[in-house]
View 1 (cartoon, rainbow, N blue to C red):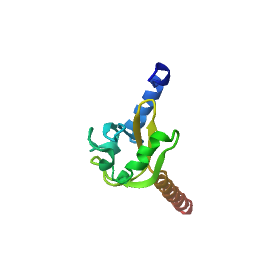
View 2 (view 1 turned 90 degrees about the vertical axis):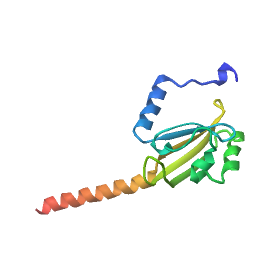
View 3 (view 1 turned 45 degrees about the vertical axis):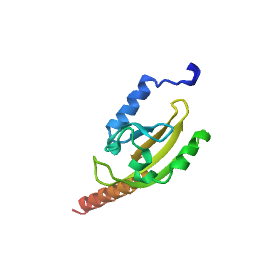
Length: 141
């Protein structure tokens, strides 16, 4: 790999990523070309063990080894799994969106696990409904 192929994260990018992970909005798992976990960070990655097979540790990825490996030869392509139930050691089952990409410069797979947008939309709608009900009750009183 030549120096031109290596892209170093800017300090603000690293800080932003760290803030998202700390806030519980993102978990990141990196795996090598053989799909062995290199590292993991974030609440939703609790219980994932470095050195063990990625797809054996994230049930949503079981059986997808060939599709994940195919990302190496398809620049820009990703596997996306919205609104998947994820159980981790840190929390009860939660709905998550999972994306898998192959990072060519880093020669590794990256799995991003985020709170499900579909689930959040329902929560926002419920909260808005409760607020409207509360305002109506105040107007009547």
